[in-house]
Length: 217
Image (tube, rainbow, N blue to C red; front, side, top):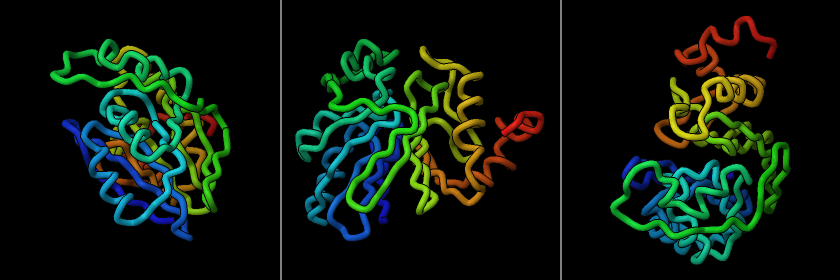
């Protein structure tokens, strides 16, 4: 598996192209505003067939170019149903005035907790991790011990919970049940900033360090 990360958009969102070992197929994880051209340049140069566009959640900085990337690649857009409403009315649900128009992008497929997605020789487990948004998800590849975490958790931080649909209690519970149960050497590829590991966050993340000491994980 090969992972290519590009940083795009006004909030410097990480978008990922995940390519199978035999180079035939790939998925895209998150489509930041202004990411389409950057993604297309790589896809065209590498002659990659994109089989899925997976959105970890529907905040505009992660989904703004979803429609354009779908048009370019022909790949289906996938998201948890609880986050669909922002894709249907992105500007209405942006929570701030945006000096640009984001086109609606109805999803092609809903993702559910514990779904198994297979693309070529890659397999991903969907883990529903609400708290940052209602339908936030993480993608876990157990064979490579890799997690695409979106805005659920960051390097020594966690996703915001002060926006509509957010909940600190839900987010910490999601981290507890869906991320901290993984082995320490699982790599977390986050929606913003550098990657990290489950172990590093277990012991060094100030938002969760000590929070789980008395919890059964």
